[in-house]
Image 1 (tube, rainbow, N blue to C red):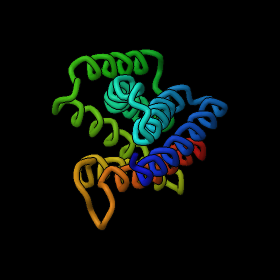
Image 2 (spheres, one colour; image 1 turned 180 degrees about the vertical axis):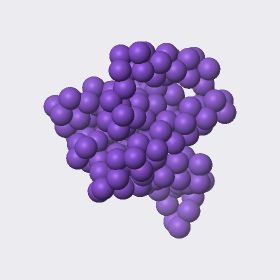
Image 3 (spheres, rainbow, N blue to C red; image 1 turned 120 degrees about the vertical axis):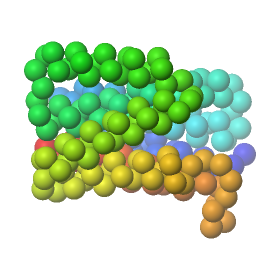
Image 4 (cartoon, rainbow, N blue to C red; image 1 turned 30 degrees about the vertical axis):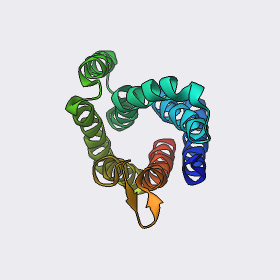
Length: 183
C-alpha cells in the first residue's frame, strides 16, 4: 500500500470527475468525456495503490485510453470553444482522435497525440485571451510538464514521482476545466 499515491490519485480523481460533471452541465461533452476518463483512471489508480489488485488490468487500459483519447478530447473541447468549428470540423477532429487512439498504443505516438492536443489548447487559449485563455495555456503546459518532465518512475524530493505527476495534473485539470467553463 502506497498511501501518498492513494491520496494524490484520489485528489486527482475528485478534481477531474468534478470538472467532468461541471463541463457536462455546461454543454461541453468532449471536455466532460476527456476529463471524466482521466478521473476514472485516477479513481482506479487510488484503488490500485490501496492494494486492490483486481483493478490493475482495467486501470492500465484506462490510463492508456486517457492519454490517447481523453487528453485529445480535452484539446478538441478547447479548439471547439475557440473557433466553434462546423460539423465537418468536428468530424475531422473525431476522425483524428480515433486514428490517434489506434496508432498511439503505449508507444511514442501516445506522446505525440497528447502533445498535439495540448498544442491545440495553447493555440485556443492564446486566441481566446483573458483569464480563461491563461487558464487553458497553464493547464496545457502543466499537463505536458507532468508527462514529459516529471513522469511516474522513481522518486523526487522524498516522494514518488507519480505523486508529483498527480499533483501537477490535478492543478492542470482544474485550470483546463475552469478555463472551458469561463469561455
